[in-house]
Image 1 (spheres, rainbow, N blue to C red):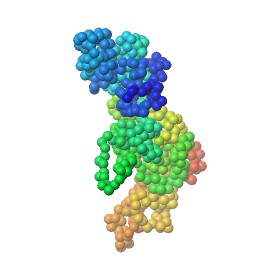
Image 2: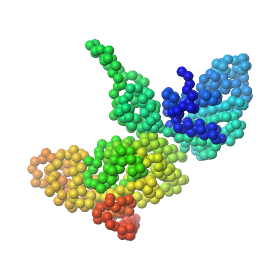
Image 3: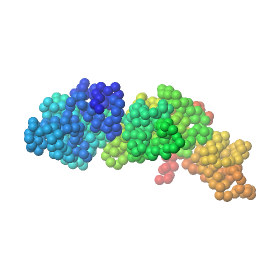
Image 4: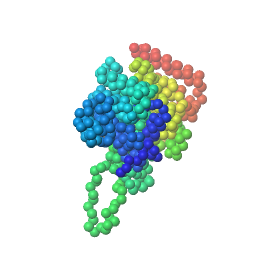
Length: 616
């Protein structure tokens, strides 16, 4: 099969097209490819591994292609490249002629030259020797070279010079020097460094203005669709579109393993009475649930436990009360489903005291909108550079997943305010997260939902419109009717049969002002446990078939809610302060003025300060 002209291929990946144009139009001769560099590449109707793709891409230019992998050594695409490299290294005095060409380079066949060079350098894994050999090739006259360094972070790792070996420090210095060498640049040479995370590579290299850094993204929807059509011929549009959506966030290699593994499934026994048509069964069934479950495992493993893939099992029908909030979120879900991206907020901030249902409603919103959902976990690490690398890994996966809801629970703790008590790591992390969240290309595709009960601990700039366009306040239910709606939603969610008509339920709930949704759920489960264990209230002689009022009334009398009432009041006032729409406030707070709100906040804050002083 002839090698296609990849530099002119209509479906050349965007990152490679950028590299090609920048190399041809500027003085840049050194590039870092970071991100999804260990995946396969689909181009010109074929699937390539990354080294093979690069070899084929450089073939029309007749460049000598040399690869170095610290775990494998030096290698070349074929005999011709190996022979040309042997001749150049002998001419440059890097290797003795007798070691690779006993008969002389002019009289030794190409196959023997390539084999001799492989015997001498093929297993060379030491960066200092391998880079010296590559440098000799880059400086060879009239021999344009494309040098590809795989796992570049292992060759020139990032870190403090005082903790690095001499060879680690000099490897970064050598790569830096190549970018400044006019001799290498004039020779029409190109140096590619491949790394999974840019932050793992030495800053001397990554911050060099003469080095171009290009991100290789996870495959987008069209890339996945073309690949699925290639590996699963015969997929109809409906199943193909469904698989394209389910496999978002995965590498093409992973999609291959999930959708079309190399090991064939066992064939079913033939019906001896069947005809020829019965042999052809068409494309097999698509194991959607299995793919989704395996995808969850893959993503969580790829991110080292930094994210949790959420698969909500409830929607708004399981959420009691909160009708104004559900109305707003239902409208947003409609915009998402209809593709009206300009009407979808960049992010949504859920603010209110603990136990008011923020996380539960966020998961229900994910289900209602049809978006995939992940929960951002703690990505901070004690090792130098690891926190930034962890965040980049997470953001790359989120970018690849596309239409997704990113949930950040307890944002005041997990994100914080960006203080510089950690050598600036937190500030850099916050700045990078802000940059990602405010990227206008993400609108309608990536929605951040952050939950917090202490928004005053968040960086002020983090909360501005453009990052969180909508800020929704959460409160405990305001009256018996709202509390009854939550109780009935809890009963539905847990599948509890109950005989609790409004005329008997509402009077019991009327005296529960300040009880949060979590408190009401605890009440219901306490009463249900008494029912199931046969612990009958006074006056009940026989165990009923369903939950009745005496059980709930005894649970109300027995249950002790939180006593942190002053803190709860302060958190509620913070929620009012952050709210972006008055329509989302309880009726008693609809007309509150800024002056009155600030006065109440100051008073509540003063009470807490005095309590803390007393406690000390």
